[in-house]
Length: 181
Image 1 (cartoon, rainbow, N blue to C red):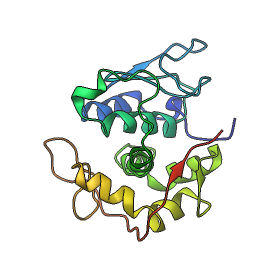
Image 2 (cartoon, one colour):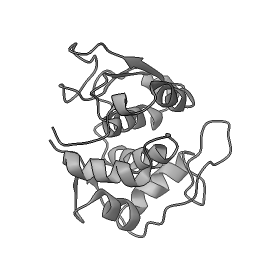
Image 3 (tube, rainbow, N blue to C red):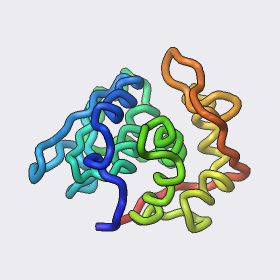
């Protein structure tokens, strides 16, 4: 497994608190046990309804990505999610940008580290890196997030019922985000 930041490397309470701001519950699964709702298996995060499941060896980027899939859905549609949240390219693209924004709201992670971990893990982007995608090739994803109230007009992350919390990140074109392993 590539060297990436894992749940054991951050404060679980911080991660749980971040997800709770979106109405999600983070669950810690005991080491060695299968992660419920994991699409990729192994140490990858799982999602079922409003719940995100991780082990200590789950990569932080995986937790944020899978949580992002639930966040982009209307709350009433989350309940039906089990393992695979969407087949929508637009939602997948939005999730890739959202997870990077969420990383800046998570102590001990940050935008730069998350982008490096995404590249190390094998996320695949047309321009060759997560940073290039988000900053130069994701205009459609930024617009999707704004249209759905997840970022403000300055591209700052928003939380339900709260003001924006971070500085904007510049992006200029459009593309698609894909994950691979």
